[in-house]
Image (cartoon, rainbow, N blue to C red):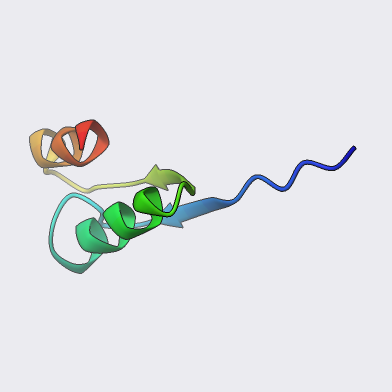
Length: 49
């Protein structure tokens, strides 16, 4: 049995290009790990989307 889970690490994912990238991966059913510097509320909105 093989596990082919896809995982993406997106830095700066709370807004702009990072946010759009994280959402695009999520739409393709990729597990996303995201980081942010100071926009916690915006990062949480990406996680909730």
